Length: 213
Image (cartoon, rainbow, N blue to C red; front, side, top):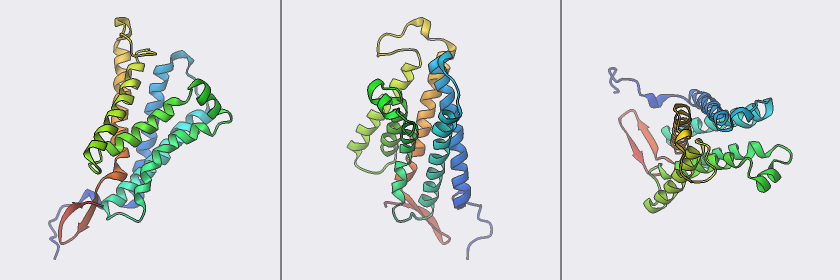
């Protein structure tokens, strides 16, 4: 019989709370990323309903919700096809491209490439830190994700290329903005790793074990 003195296990968090917390976390993360974008663009940055809410915050909530559900599935034995939730970060690329002419602008000017980079960081980095798959592949993917994070970080200092950083560009504000971006990407990578991680099989009669799935 299960001991009445057993402490509650955080892994008993249900599907709805997991999805809700994921969505809230996704909104907070996307809103923070929007703040970094303001720092990057400066006075040229502006807010509008569609770009800010429909193309940044809403995808953040959607992706966070899916990753929260993925973590719930992972903690409760998995489900058929649940690993496909790993492609949820693609929403950050799709949402901006729904605007008329956005794809043409991306191809011809590169504007909007940041959303593609964020998606790639999540997809590549998530698999790299998941602990599953060939080690050599995870190392390669991890290096690619790290390079993208580094590119975004140095861009915060106003660099268009990887040239020398002018000392005047290194200010408390620029260092803060660079730290914000880098830390957001690290959180993003580990969140995107959830659908790749090993499934936890729970039993009231034995300790939880991590098994390959």
